[in-house]
Amino acid sequence: MTSLIDYFNVTESDMPQKGVSYKNNLIKRSIIAYMAVKGECTLADLMRELHISIPTITKLVQDLVDDGIVTDQGKVETSGGRRPNIYGLANAEVYFAGVNVGRDSMNYILIDLQNRVVFERNDSDFELTDRPQCLDRICANIDAFLAESGVDRSRLLGIGVGITGRVNPETGRSFKYFASPDHPLRDLLSERLGVCVLLENDTRARCYAEYTVARPHDEQNVLYLHLGRGVAVGIVIDGKIYYGKSGFAGEFGHIPFFDNELICSCGKKGCLETEVSGIAIENRMRSKIEQGVNTILREQYDSGRTIHIDDIVAAALNDDNLSIELIEEAGEKVGKAVAILINIFNPETVILGGNLAAAGDYLMLPLKSATNKYSLNLVYKDTDFRLSTMNDQANAWGAAMLVRNKVIGA
View (cartoon, rainbow, N blue to C red):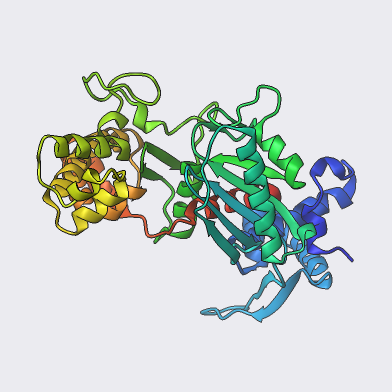
């Protein structure tokens, strides 16, 4: 009898590359993957999705029922005609971990095959640095999380790790942190943790979670705009994350948008980030305070405490005029840039996330107004805008789902 874990604990290269048994095992994996992602289904649903004949599908599904992997849930109600049986997974007890390695925190989540959250944890006692000791800390933290979850490690099939900066998921390389020319970060993590690792950019991981978990209807083309200390965009086209050639698609913040002399973190001048990122707004706040403009954050500044973008958003929500003004200015500038994006991609939805999204209408209203002003009217009318409704675990959740899909072939 074959167990659920047996189907995904080996790669296709480990299986004999010929014969009916090999072909049937691949189809069974596809059946399990379909049920994991889509949920309960009929034999006709599987036939249409997998392009396999009804006799073959019927036999292979029955094999999975006999193995206790799939359950026959009986007849489904129909408006007429013969009622088909509906099938679903009997259990989903293989697991995938998602980890978000942020600049000043780590987030962890554990999901089962059907994307149900089994365990999660946040760790704010962390600082990301490009040093070997930090990599040791990351691995130790992940090991501690997995131990705390109580899940049998043999049933853990993959770990998705999202990290800030440029990442190529195909090669497993990070180009900002731990960028060894000989040892991709993905391989270092996989060797240290003893399990398959998928390395992903944090914004794309968040984008996938927003698209998969939080979408209100069957969207296929979505832009996720992350407005944090930097500015980036995740792109979903025809239901799939768009990476570009080297995995660098989405560097929206580095469009040379302004004619200024401000140096961006990328080393060039005039990037969008130089005026609308969280760091840019923090700099503007400090400059305004030094010029004598009144704000409820003055006492914090005068006491020598750092003013973070979260403080500015909180002050805006507390009716601080200067904070509102700075966020609205950023919203208008971002909106003009978003007009370019929607003219190019014509998406169904633009989702706003990141620290600035917590400002709500103080950000959204000027952003939409500017987007409407500078985009094509037909394109703007096609596009819905919404704020992210997901919490800080979204990046880790997206990374977990991406590694799940890679392992099961969904």
